[in-house]
Length: 133
Image (cartoon, rainbow, N blue to C red; front, side):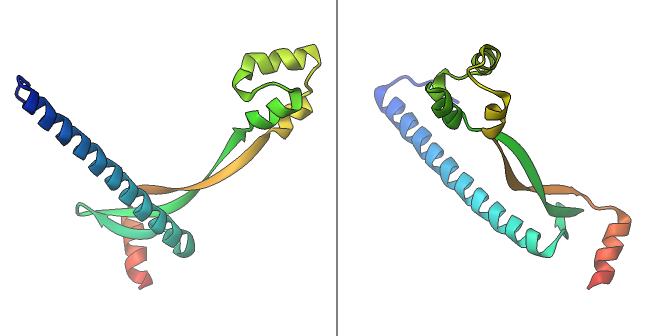
């Protein structure tokens, strides 16, 4: 990469940089859309055998459950802004009796999401998929 020495070079470099950012955004959007479609198909049909660079690969949609915490709800319960609530402040409120552990539990919820899982297929699995069809 050459050094930038003039204003026109800086302008051209800046334009290329912005174009690269736009391309990256479009590519990420395309990847996310295709991944969502593939996960939807895998949820209906189950794991499938595909080839990735001449390597047999099993892909499947795996459910991931994560526990989330709603600070906005907790903030409305105690009358504080959500931005002021951090783990230490929440612990202090519980210790002082202004907040109960049950109220903190109310603000937790589970969120499930499906992720794409890929792994190398074993010989038995390859044979099973071939015999399936």
